[in-house]
Image 1: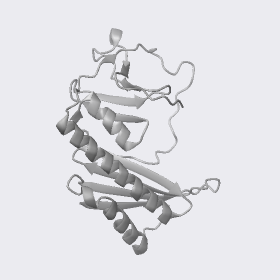
Image 2: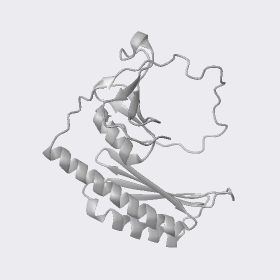
Image 3: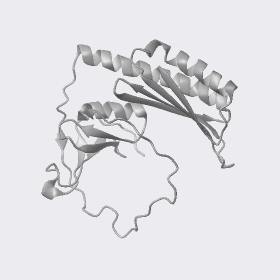
Image 4: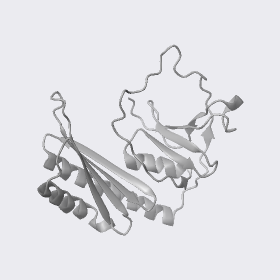
Length: 212
């Protein structure tokens, strides 16, 4: 298992490196058969108004899947402890799902109901790009079904997940809707959206009750 440590606004000392190796390797020790690489990002916020300034993020690449956890606190070592516990729970959940799929395969032919959206999504607003790109991420994108992409969305802990659709060969984005459930964004002129417009579809999976 390869473990890589990155730092932002912080020097990765030997003591920090040793602590990360001890905590993270212990957290993934029971899952090394499915773990290929572990990336650890440690950062310190320079904004004095942010109380939880010490952040630790762990990204694990496991057999084509990406599992992510992030925690922040006033202490870097406490953040490492918290994220180690969280990533261990994520790995346990991932392994249990894999075992469930092996015994009871889930149909990947999820029902997708197209939902027409306006061609101009920004209206009178002026599109503005950030002045500076503060972070760039690269990750492998093996073809996967809609059901597999929905699982990945839950594992990485983001509001959206970009994936290579195995059925269409296109790049899609699955996201968590504000009022529950999930949606899918597909490219324009791919035949899935009505009149060649971008398709924004509801995914036929259980909805969540919370709202943002």
